[in-house]
Length: 364
Image (cartoon, rainbow, N blue to C red; front, side, top):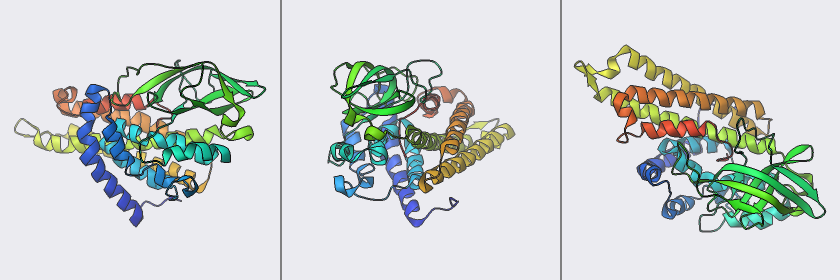
């Protein structure tokens, strides 16, 4: 069972990430949202923290630190408290690298993991979502047809995080009677990468659409080799991580609203003393605590190697719904100020709406 208290190491991670997010991510968030871009300097600054490479095996150039989903959930919450969009950007390399560590063949680990252990920011992206209504990652329209020496992929993917700079894509496709993942190089013949997508929220996070027109993939680039991989586990990692991002975003909304309501006066007293406002803030706090318990429980299942499918879905579904509710209430608490760019709550509202339909943006 997971503990309701943090270890000394987890407290250290929490405090250091909280400080980093406050000093670097939060101040940069608005400019990234306005310009719809993240600077190379910012990504490089985060890369130098070693959030990805320190948890990769030493045999491939990593730091060989044990990966703890619970500790990573704490880390992700703190980063997302700074800004959710930038959190997905700075942790994007982990989604590809972790999938290779967990499911890749020895040859795939030797080929791809060293890319994420260098001194410069490097990213590979998961291509899970598709541009259709009611997209289900485990029932993709993208197909992989067997060929003598490999596979032929056909279909489309959307909301591929940092696809504009990714060197490789991990594409989910229907393969005979199950869903599998395939490593596709950026320069693969038949692969088209769109211009950055125009999204409602997460504007600082560049996402693209992929079109695969009979893209040939070698047998050695099926994740896990001939035996394939467990795509459900990849999804579970992603869903728990996204729930942690939504948790951090929700906490940011609440912690911004509380001092605002104490300073904002109506009828000669702070609006925090109004029962309707106080009750709303209390309910927001309750939902955040419930969200954290679900995230930690699902992360504990992942850490213990227990099937986390139900727990991950619960955490992600609950966080998606309640984060949207919290962000909406944050806008309402600020009144007219909730809709203007002087305050970040309107941006967080847009982030919450976008995150609630996202798959594969980050890994835990």
